[in-house]
Image (cartoon, rainbow, N blue to C red; front, side, top):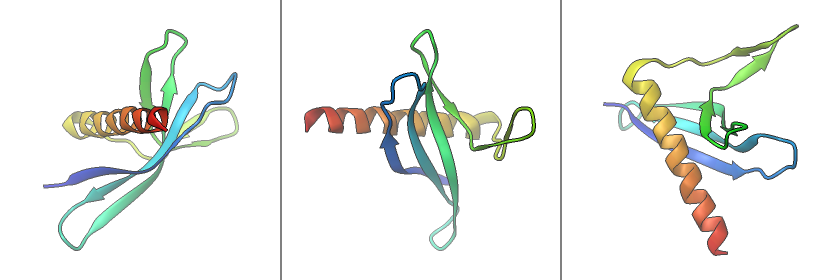
Amino acid sequence: MTKISVDGMKLINKPGNNVRAVCDLILRVDETSALRLCGYRVIESDSGSLWVSTPARHGAQRWFDVIAASGPLRKEIHTAVLEAYERAGKIQGAK
């Protein structure tokens, strides 16, 4: 079973920028093997809702996802990132 953890959650608060945080994911496959996925972002929409953006690269005319997950794995990743974002905000607010 793969275990998902979030690493390096960095909160961002720049006026005019809808990116609220960046982080990496670590997918631990077993006790000795893991995959690090760098560049996930927490985005705040104009309506105020949060969503998770996968790592992407800018092409000549638009952005392209570098990593794509589907099904239950996608939901687990997004849940893990948003929960880590909420924890980081609470920790920062307590300082």
